[in-house]
Length: 266
Image (cartoon, rainbow, N blue to C red; front, side):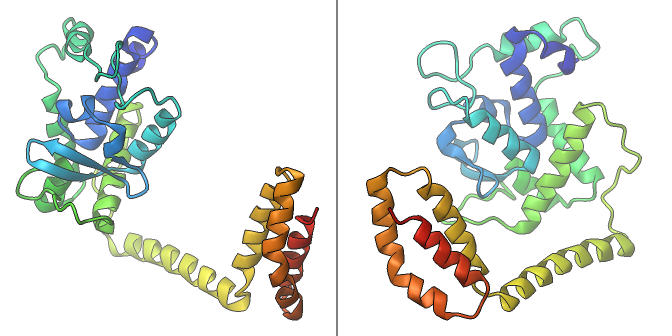
C-alpha cells in the first residue's frame, strides 16, 4: 500500500513519516516535529529536547540514519519534515493517513499501532523488555541523561537489527528466520569476523606505523590541487619543515609524504 502511495507526490512526505515511525518505534508527534538539531547521525540517535518523558535519547538503526543523511541534502528549515509554509512542521499527516487507509482493511488502525508493532517485532527477535524500552523511550528504560554522548553499542546493534528487519518487511521481503540468531555457531562467526578485522587493522598499523601520515598526505595533495597559487604556498610552508624528517625515515610511506608535500610547492 505504501509503495503505491509514494508514487503520488502528494503523499511522499506522509509515507516517509509512516516508515520512520515504523523503523524507530517513536511516537507520531516525535517524528512529525523532529528537528535537525535533534538528529545525531554520528552517534546513531535522536536527541529529543521535549518528549513525553522530557529530554530523551533514542538509538536508531542504520536504515534510519541513512534516510536522514540523504534527506539532509534537501534540508529546508529547522524541521526534518517541513510544512508547506514558513518554518513549520508538516501538518497534513492526519488527513493523509485517513485518505490512505479509510477504504482498506487497515481503516481502523492508528499510527500508534506502528509503535506497538516495533516493540512486538523487537520482542519476537529476542530483545529484552529493558532494551525495547530504551529504544522506544518508555519511562522505565529511556535514556535521558543529557551528559550521555556515546550510546551503548548493544542498543545500536539492537536498533540496526530491528529497523533492518522492519524495513525488509515494508519492502516486501519474506523472512525465513523470525528470531535473532543466538546459536553458538552464529555467535562464533560474528565474533571471528569482528576479531579478524580488528587484528588486521592493528597489524597494518604495527607493520607500517606511518601509513596514517601517508594517507593524510594524500588528502592534503588532493586539496592542494584545488587551491589557488598563494594558498598552495602557505600549505608548502607548513609542510616543508617536516619533509626532512619524512625523508630520513626508512619506512616506505614517508617518501610519498615528502613527495606530497613538495607537490604543494608553488
